[in-house]
Image 1 (cartoon, one colour):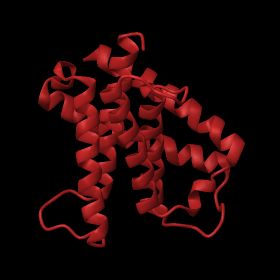
Image 2 (cartoon, one colour):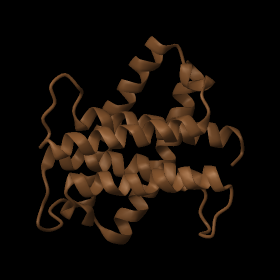
Image 3 (cartoon, rainbow, N blue to C red):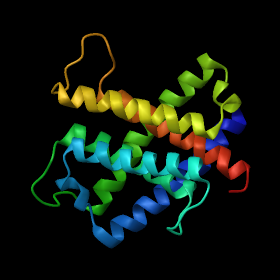
Image 4 (spheres, rainbow, N blue to C red):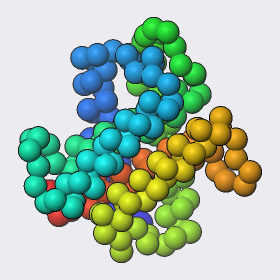
Length: 181
């Protein structure tokens, strides 16, 4: 499991570094996005991954790995938006945006460690395409919950689905990195 922790932390650093670079370019402009729009952004990325996996080629010069990184970062942004609510303008500093990223990633990482313990690293036996399918499934569930104004009878909420999507995407990053892609 220590290798998983190290690999997970390397993947988190890769995602965090891009998040910070984009923050420097755009600021926290995503504060204007409603959670449903963030869900749709993740859907676009997951759909593109599935298309690339199915077609095997691409016309835009970005492969699957950057899309998984995008899912991680939009998932964290989604968690931040769920806790803060939508804003009418950029209302937090870059430093606060990074602090919130780290807090939400820490909670997501803790969830991964707990589930990884209970499932005994079953994710290592899975194919990358299965992570894509699971993320798409979680997206459909999230959209249903959003369409029901966040209400569930027995299921986890939107935040838990975002965390699962983030963790599946990080598993995809780890696997693709191991494969040298």
